[in-house]
Length: 180
Image (tube, rainbow, N blue to C red; front, side):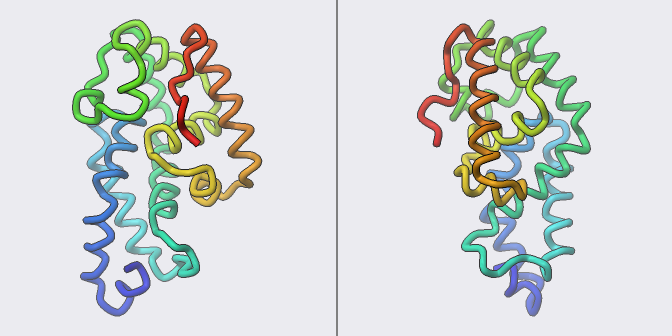
């Protein structure tokens, strides 16, 4: 689809139709719903502008799009931390109702959710990116490695450190149990 859009730009809409909802859910979880529409639009605009640089040997554009979105999320890092701190204080997650799957489905409401938000806010950016790409983005370790341009061993170590920290903050509960 990406390469095909070089000759027929309207084909890029197929890529948007296939992945926009998933990328939106990931970005909304990272930054809050108020930023998601803009970041997703910017993600696909960047992808469209850079489509000639897409590595056609990849079997999916999904990690590429998540990589662009993750880079844009980094620009909003302070907003993300404020969102997680507010969630920690209030226990109200406006995205949980719309995207009630993955981690949210396995973590009890109220105090557990607040503790999770606080734990996520305290992770390093690298740990948080890896953990949330797996837990909220649904990417495999291999896809995360491609998305972030890091070795799979780095993904595994960041995931391990992130899980240990989050598990400790949740009193021994691992919200990513069952994830690869």
